[in-house]
Length: 169
Image 1: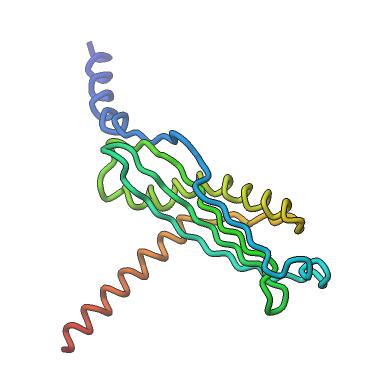
Image 2 (image 1 turned 135 degrees about the horizontal axis):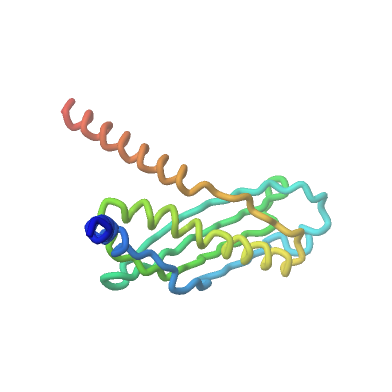
């Protein structure tokens, strides 16, 4: 009888966590752009590139339990002052999310989802750069948790600044 009581109590405490669902439904390439404005001149110069990487994440609710998350990577590679090539990849995923507290959703959509999508976007960038006849470009890993924490901190600082400005007027 004791076992039944303990098992029942354990099941009752596990039910909320068991009701939470997070699953990747599909990964797909939403958009891909490659430009080489220097053309053949890029291959005639000494290859000492400067690489600039920009990241952006957007999430959209599709229905009650599904979200589309789009990770946009924009890579600009320059030789001196000229752009050798520019790549923009929008790697998207359809995620099934159910039973999570509303306050946990922004962090999940802006950290875990892009973390899953990033290797696909990185491979797409590398592949298209090589097809453009440039040396392979393997992008370093990205800490999406740190980026999200920084964005939250910036938003709080901006809110505090706005409150101070409103108070002074």
